[in-house]
Length: 292
Ligand SMILES: NC(=O)c1ccc[n+]([C@@H]2O[C@H](COP(=O)([O-])OP(=O)(O)OC[C@H]3O[C@@H](n4cnc5c(N)ncnc54)[C@H](OP(=O)(O)O)[C@@H]3O)[C@@H](O)[C@H]2O)c1
Image (cartoon, rainbow, N blue to C red):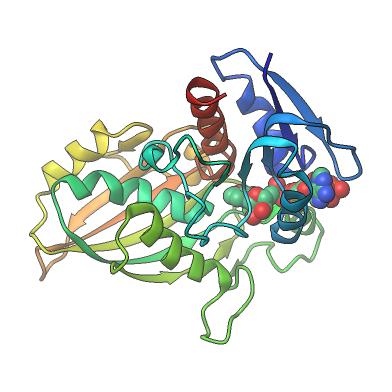
């Protein structure tokens, strides 16, 4: 029986992944590891840890673990490491791959709505403003949110991650570079603005997307609804409804009043599921089916 570890099993993503692993249809054994646990040889493992811990754990474990899926941002921009969303670019995992990065949650929702349109449109520019849930900041932020007087109580905070020399936050830069890498569009222009809002779970984004061709709204909806785990809703859909769901929802699609090659829409999705643990579960399923 193959063994797959969840390292960082007591964090927000680690706990969600324990539930997600129950949906894997190939037999395997799950092993759970917290901060001070000894980690033995394993067939595969998911690192549900932050950048510094993932970097250190990878060095310690790479010779003992067959395949490592990392949830942190640490390896995502390494050209030798595939950045994988199974609905979009599973082919970037090859028989020689040993380390796979799972993308940023906000970027995941965005590219889930861009990838299906690439069949019909040459996408050139995307602007988004995010409304990101507290659970995206892990267990410490959830604790802070539930502490009376928290900055996040009844509020929205335009700072996620840290501000870099460019003035962008680290979260916004992930939106630029990860979108380009996942979609294989190195020149697509991405204009990100990321905001934390007082919503416990499920991220949302307002998106403006530009292509070389004029958009046909009926075709856009058709392409979205034909794509796995993505659905266009004619009704308004909010993070309360998306929380706990595997689907990424889009709504409020409209063509720009002046530019027919620009559309605007709203998306919402569960950052802990498609944005993290569900994506990791899909990658592990693929590894178990094809490579383990
Ligand atoms: N939350 C999201 O929506 C989301 C989405 C996409 C990606 N991610 C990424 O996923 C990773 C985990 O996020 P999270 O939200 O689950 O954070 P979290 O709630 O802070 O959980 C991190 C967990 O890692 C554990 N840990 C740290 N060092 C460890 C070690 N050496 N061995 C084993 N466990 C160790 C921590 O242990 P203690 O409990 O002892 O502190 C904690 O339980 C991060 O890189 C994050 O950026 C998160």
